[in-house]
Amino acid sequence: MSADPFEALLARREPLLALAPMQDVTTLVFWRLMARYGGADVYYTEYFRVHADSKLDKPILTSITQNPTGCPVVAQMIGNDIPALVRSAKELQQHPVAAIDLNLGCPAPIVYRKCAGGGLLRDLPQVDAILGALREAIPGKFTVKTRIGFDDERTFDELLPILQRHSLDLLTVHGRTVKQMYRDGVRYDLIARAAADMKCPVLANGNVSSAAVAADILRDTGARGLMIGRGAIRNPWIFDQFRAIQRGETPFIPCGRDVLEYINVLHESVTEPGSPESSRINRLKKYLNFIGDGVEPSGAFLHAIRRASTEDGFFNICREHLDHGEAMPMEPFAKPGIAVA
Image: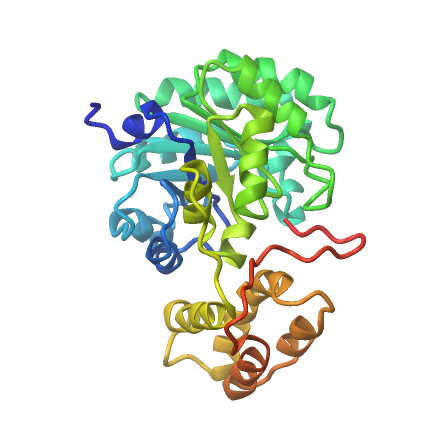
């Protein structure tokens, strides 16, 4: 067996499960929380913002140097300045990372307007140049996470040959365009094309909303594995549920009190005891925006949570909806016109 744990994951027969990089969410403390619930096989950092004067972000670097999961970590970069990206990639290789990843998919306007993240998909010659420079600068594993285009899925026809040229070690494809954000219409057929055409393993990403959906996506795309983001915030059991399905076992389904305990653990993990109460509540609301989609279909829970102004009020609302022993699959309830990924 390979001495490289990431290489060993890629070589095994089981599907590879990755926790998606989510800015201001997938911190060290959140990684620790995910691992407590079964967790992913590999963890991607929040992106390191790279530009001419940038330095490695210390809190993100801490998630690498103090990795609490026992699993490989991939360091993700975002930017368009080739010398700065090369410099940062070399610096990151001095730390215990399994791979360096380039973000070609962030759909945040503040990012893509600077021609970074998903914005780079409007400039494929620059993508080609960046990939070539980084592949030359990274002797170890080099990976890419991309969307299928900026505002036109036909961009993928041009993008895929560029990705093929640069000897990537792993490719993650989010099957939406940048402008599509998180709306419905994930192009799993394009992920399947990448899985068939790329020489490296491909992870499928986009609307992996439950363990059963994950199994369907894996089957339909032929991907080597899955990257899960929002679905893992809503349902931290999703990784182990998927593994159970793959083994032919009945997956664990949480009850209301299990979800309530998860929210309590979130509170203990992601909020700072000495910070203002309003800051702690707002921090929790960031996660409840995703969790709430699986609590009840009317939106009443989220409506109340978003208006909570004290921790007592916040947890009273949670107890009102979740202090019961009924099964809660934590799959997102459909909302017309709103994505639930």
